[in-house]
Length: 471
Ligand code: ATP
Image 1 (tube, rainbow, N blue to C red):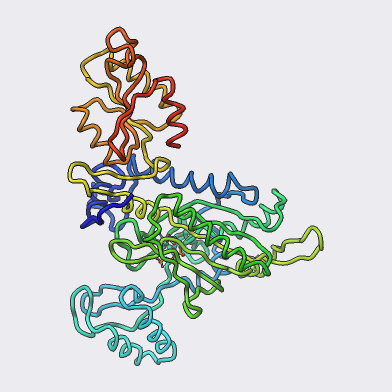
Image 2: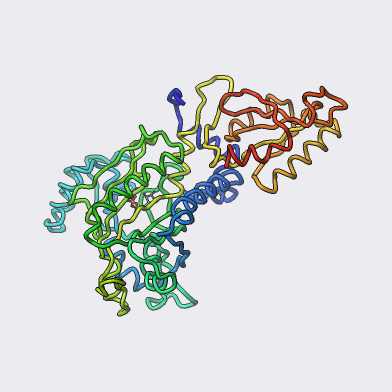
C-alpha cells in the first residue's frame, strides 16, 4: 500500500503512543525518569504479538532450535570471559563548561571517529585533549568552543551488589545482552536435548546498558529487550549459514509488514568489528531521526565457547557423533531489539495521508485487538445483550475490544487509530429475524480498517473468519 510521507512522524507516533496507551513515560507521576518508558495496555499486546510471532517462527516451528530463559544476573566471571568487562565500552567526551557527556560516535561521522581513534591510541594524555579540540569545535549542548576533556572509555554495564555487603566481592552486573546466558548453558542444553549441529538456542529477555546518550523515544534506552539466537555450526559452514540468516532476517522484517525500501544492510568494515566478530551486518532502518541500526547479524566464531571453557574449566566442546571429533562449534548470531521493532513497526504503520481518518496499518497478526465489537445502540438492551454474547464468545480465543460509546463513525475512527483490523457491529438485523430483515438474520456488519468497506457475515462463521484472516 503506498502512502504519503508523514510530517513530524516521530512526534505524532510518540503522541499516539501516550494518548492511546501504547507507551507511557516511565515513573511519570514523579516527574519521570529520563529515557525510561513503560508499555501500556495496547503496547504490551503489540510487543507480545511481536515476541510470539518471533518465537513461533524461529523456535516452535523449527526442529533445529530450542528456547532458553536465563537469569539476568550472572556470575561476574561470565563478563570477564566474554570480554565485556574490558571491551564493552563507548568512547565518552565531556564538555568542560556544561559537563555534558557525549558518546563520540554519535557526534562525529564514522570516518572522522576512526581516524581520531587511531591517533588517540598512540597519543600521550596531553596530546589527546588537543586532538579532540581539533575535531570537535563546539559543544553540541552549550556551544562552548573547544572545551573538551580527554576522552575516556566508559563501560556500559550496569553494576549492582548481591546481598547486603557493598564490597568488591559482592559486585555483579545486569546482563548487557542475552547471548551470554546461552553460551554458559550450552553444555546443559546439549546434554538434555541431544541436538546435533547445526542447531540454535533462542532467548527473549531484558538487557541493560548504561548508555551515554540514550534517546529517540524507545530507540535507545538503558533497559530494553532482545530476541537473540546463537546458531551453532561447523566452522567450514560459516559463510553458508551467514547468508542463510541474512535471508531469514529479511523475511522476518517482511513478515512484520515493514517496508523493505526503508531497510538497508550495512556491512561493518573489518576495523570496525566488535572484539568477538569476524563479520557483522547491520539491518538499518530509515528512522525519522536518521538511518540507524534495527538489528545485527554477527559471526562470533568460537570466541565465546572457547573463552568460557578456558575461564570455567568446563569442557564446552561438541563431540561429532560420527567421527568422534571434539571441537568448539562456531556461532552465527541474529540479534534483534524488541523495542526497536515496536518503534519501526509503529512508524511504518502510521498513516494520516487521508485527512478524514488516521489509520495504523499494522499487520493483523501484530494488532493489539483483532476486532472490536459494537452494539449499534447502547440504550437497546436486546442489542447490548446480543453483542455481549458475541464479545464473550470471541474473547475466549482472541483479544477483542468492546465499545458502546458515541456514534459508530467515532468508534470506527478510534479503532482505526490503534490498528484494529475489523469492527463488528450488532444491529437489529443481527437478532433472530423477528425485528429485522430475514436475510440479515444472525449476521453482523464487519467493517474493514484498511478499505472502510463493509460486509455481512454470519455470527456462527465469525470465529472461523477471525482465525483465518487475522491470526
Ligand atoms: P547501537 O550501535 O545502536 O548501540 P549495538 O550495535 O550496540 O547498537 P547490539 O549489541 O548489536 O547493538 O545489540 C543487538 C540489538 O539490540 C540491536 O540491534 C538493537 O536492536 C538492540 N539494542 C541495542 N542497544 C539498545 C538500546 N540501548 N536500546 C534499545 N535497543 C537496543
